[in-house]
Length: 547
Ligand code: F6P
Image 1 (tube, rainbow, N blue to C red):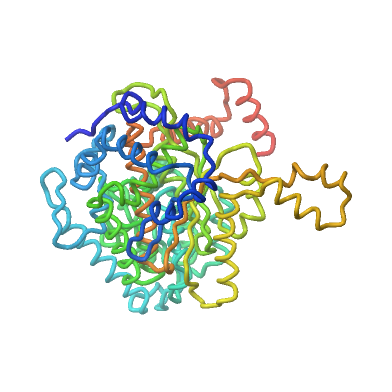
Image 2: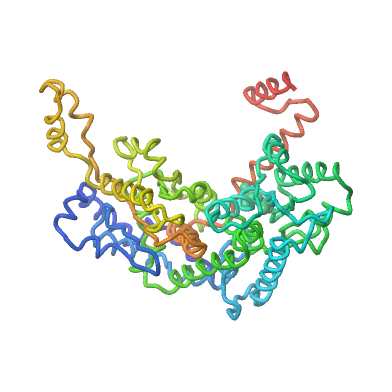
């Protein structure tokens, strides 16, 4: 089945939403809570160890039902089936989108071009398990017979961000192996990492789906040359493994075929941490934890696939994004995790969400006449409260935010945990209620200020509130709950792409950047810069002056 290709703005539901928007856009959430004691019970979902409260949004129950009508009218249900069943929904690249198969069950059947891919998926999982165990328990050794102590992941984009984010997020579950990630083509990055390495005890994992990415191949070559300064070619096999679909290129690079962990074209780079791209995760936290991560994602997959839209977490949260993006004209969304472990989560989501839904041609080949992909950004709380929260509270922009929290801390320091969660909850409450003139006045009147000073200060201290937030509150950060959380955001990408009638799974915009850089690199190497505009020419001249 081809994906439906309905311009959302032509649907009945869209028109109904436009009319409805006019009647609710000025409503105050605070009043809605006052009028309905059950608001939070009606607008929240309990699922497994997740409590998702979306009641602090500028919606009524009618808004939600109209948004879900829109989802039905653009045939979201059919699209979800096509996604899970391996239809070629990445039409522009003629590929299925099957990262969900990577966390499927052994006895599932997932067909790609008529062939069940699950046996291959489990074969690679078994290879990951065996290799991880052998490295962790010291059975496999380096060229001088010492056990490995350090893993270096070399990759970029989806071949870096996912593994790096998860290894950081699950550091509590980590074993003795140290991990480093080299991604940027900036030579200072690789050199800073090399300074910390002992060639005798370091394993290098080169991750590149295509094995043609400039950054990754440059870093891998620099590292291999550094390694060969200490020993010889035959030892490369012991210290370098690769994850790729391009076995030929990997062999050309000098890596033994037995050291290749395969992946498939039906796994998009930004959704690939569940595949052998997650090898560094499995090495860092052990295969069992890696598998728990996959099992969590599988649970979210089943929820997303089967649950009615009304109680379907990814669907409901996606439709709220559509509400703000397309009706309130909000440009960005913040993701604030009250967990230092999720330090890299927003950065990871930026690739997933913006590389997928930063598109402007619809599935009929026409330029869209409405807004698509939102800007995603964020930093962990409480740090972000002392950085950009001022703008969320009192700036001119509407910034809906997801607040992610974990009820239990991992190290069990209750005093810190109470303070962390107090901040987490207090911020969403403050964003909802704001601070009225009367409240500020009362506060100021208890101070030593004169009436004149109070009146002067008053407007600056008022907070309008009415700022929307979703609270995604999870019992505890475990490999399984993290898997669920990541899969939740992956499924939001699908839903939003379907509603916006765009193709979410190609990335031609990024590929243009790759081509342009190689043209300029050619010019830098030859020193002749003829065919550029004046600005580009000057930049090249400035560079030449110092090199
Ligand atoms: O940045 C573009 C991109 O194609 C991403 O989609 C991908 O994750 C990244 O490059 C790395 O690609 P590869 O794994 O093929 O090296």
